Length: 420
Image 1 (tube, one colour):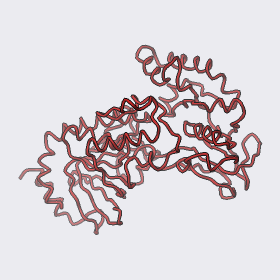
Image 2 (cartoon, one colour; image 1 turned 45 degrees about the horizontal axis):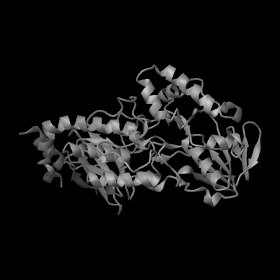
Image 3 (tube, one colour; image 1 turned 45 degrees about the vertical axis):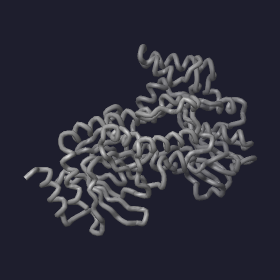
Image 4 (tube, one colour; image 1 turned 135 degrees about the vertical axis):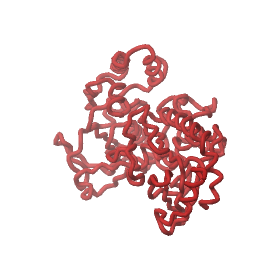
């Protein structure tokens, strides 16, 4: 008997699905978990190779982080040519740094162009590799709380680095009587006009939220707990990121870092005198070691310099009306915005795999090797290199699956009726 037919027949007769009440569905091609930019990129690359795929998304829309959990004034921090997804460039009419609305339009157009059609309202409860049958079993809760077990040969994890807000555990949060929100809930500074707001976190989001608050006549303060590199968004008439990528083709990383720091010092001054200390190593080396991206300044530092944005060190504790800081200062605030980033949720649902770290939910292997695991398991969008890294992963995954697909997957499609 054909080994693939035998495997399909055994699985169809298996009386022990992950959930006894679950309906079982056979997926002839790869299953992609997540319909953000990473999942869409992987699906499009597979589509270009003629490989069927199924995309599951827990939200009711694609690109839910961008559509539902970003602030209004957001723009891409990098030029559009470094953020476009595979096989589909941005419209020429878009500016160098597209707005949030323009990027959402681009994502919708991307999905339409490739006819991707994710299934919305599907939340993965558990995914586990069946060693007996050599297939993935993925238990999914649907929009009506129905439970379905999907069975597939390839599983692509595209839930990304920003699956869940990371909420910092600050002493006194229960005592504080003002408003505390995560930056994923922040939309505009309009509702904070004339209010004192503490922004916790000095990444790109925290800095931009501060600037937005200034533009709406609020009084923001910024918590800078750790050292951070701040670079101008543009230098020498071009994007800092693009210039860095170009220089790295010709010069070693440490020399490029020295150049970036020299130009930044000339353009921005010494940030340490305003309470923002730089790491001991350069921005590109720091990024490669820690995964932390340099802040690309779009005007917030000017507000810091003129005192419009106050800078505080780490929070010691929150009080009923504000915060006490580690340097002994105390201040009252009407609201606190936690720009403390996001985290992966992969360990909560992907079981018994060594590909992802249980600690942080990222692939154990660093970029550029982290996209492929064992037994048909893949990861897209966990590179800490933004949309450019996700595109790299998507292309590699499609190429790898295509090699498998050409040798055996077409035979499996004939078995679909057995599983349904």
